[in-house]
Amino acid sequence: MKKIMMTLLVVVLLLSGCTTVEAVPFETYLDQLLVEVIDAQDIGINLSFVNPEAYGIEPGHYELGFNTLDDYETSHTFYKETIKTLKSYKKLEGQEAIDRDVLISYFESHLDDAKYYDYLEGDALGYARSMIANIATYLEVYQFRSEADVLRYLNFIETLPIYLEAYAEFEIERQSRNTGYGQEIIDEIIQMAKNTALESSSDDYFLIRIFNEKMGNADFDGSQYIETHRDLLKQNYAKAYQDLADVLSTIEAQETQGLYYSENGQAYYEYALKQNTGLDMSVKEINVMLQKAFTQNVLKIQSVDQSLIEVLYTDDFYPHYESGKALLDDMRLLMRDDFPEIGPVNYVINQVDPSMAENASPAYYFTPYVDYDVSMEQYIFINGVHEDSLFNTYAHEGFPGHMYQFNYNLKLGMHPIRNILTVGSNSEGWANYVENYVVKYVTSDAFADLYTINETLTQIVTVMLDIGIHYEGWHLDDMVDYLIDMGFALENATTDEFKDLYIYIAAHPAVYPMYYVSSIYIQNLKEEAQKSWDDYSDYKFHEAFLNMGSSRFDVIASYLD
Image 1: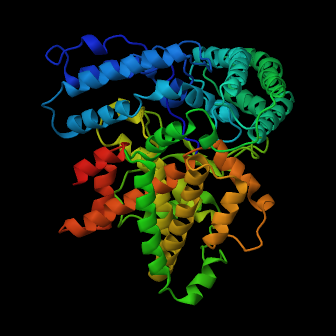
Image 2: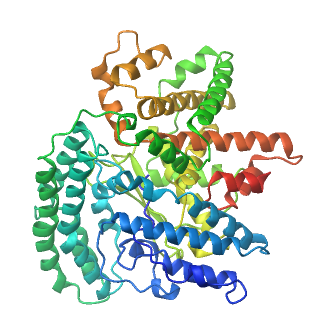
């Protein structure tokens, strides 16, 4: 999923260091903190709030933005002061205590951001999961509630060349410091940028059609902006991506390798692994956890009926649904004995526009507004046509995955800042966990167990590839040798067969662990609960986990203990 939430761009130190508990109640402090962590020029405001002014947020003209090292260091000071202030609220109870502890953990996890400035800021310039590769998706779901929203949107497009140029020049700087992308990744970004420039210079570009439709349905005279929008897309937007491709084409980078070979790369990988898994564990500790899970699942699969294994690889065990909507509507009924109810959700399932299909994820979900009500549509995007084999994908993005969890969060009564400062490992770990869990609704228990075992083994091996490439310095042939040794590739497998996978993992360090390590940890929490709770049920475990909201796992574990 390409999850849309507020980007913590340049945070401004305004009040955290000078506020006392006696003077400011905790809820009031969080109200102020919410305003502080949001950049008024962040387009994410439109995607996260219907009425930001009600929260004290005054949107400016939106821009993509670019952060300097000074901005990161300013944020570091802000984080330290915020942690200090949060810790001064010692006598909180209930939801306020949870909010405090979760936020402390969140800000503590970002204290070292400035040390890895090159990697974190450079991450915006990728070819698949990056912010810059997905700008069109953000603009597609942008809402025009007033003419001011139109002007902010147009300013974002008009100023885009400035910021894409900044990121292109930054990549040149990163190359000189041995922190930049490898040549194969650069080539992928160039191709993405060229494709975007070509598509957006056409009168048939999908953003033109969508904007025109929205202007036709607006509560104001939107027709006056149609020509301006078309011209800005053809000129500024297309030019921004073409210029990006042109500048990157001047780079002669090294062959793509893991972070092991980059400046301070191993240290950054360990940092990224902690960030993306929500666990304060070293690479060695995660390795131990994975090896234990691998051994346990290998033992389980040895006793499985061989006929079930044959069915596993046919993909014909999924039930037929006419549409993704029909599938998810049925899923809500199937899951009700195992998951708490959340009430009605208004959503649509859209197909990723063909112009973005090559670089888009298989599917993604846009999180609901902080001030969401059921009259507002939520969006799931599927990359391709509906197929029965997408059963797990729909569960991941919809029910009981992302859409279910984020709507559950809205009813918890936690402070709105908790729906802004979210934790990717929590949401992706949960969605990965439930997409395996729901197989039991459409197959036998024995087959569902086999499915989960097989998925877990595959995911553990994938994480080991990530660690091997980035932390241990594996080259492509090392990766293939490992896959052959583990039985996940044929003895005669060639490096050409796995080069794309190697490049993808090299381009996205610690991304697979965000999904797979996190879901394995949730399963571990579940097994601990099964042992220690006298009244255990899956329903109660799911409810207890969900009641923590989006949080790093250290906090969740302490509350579930």
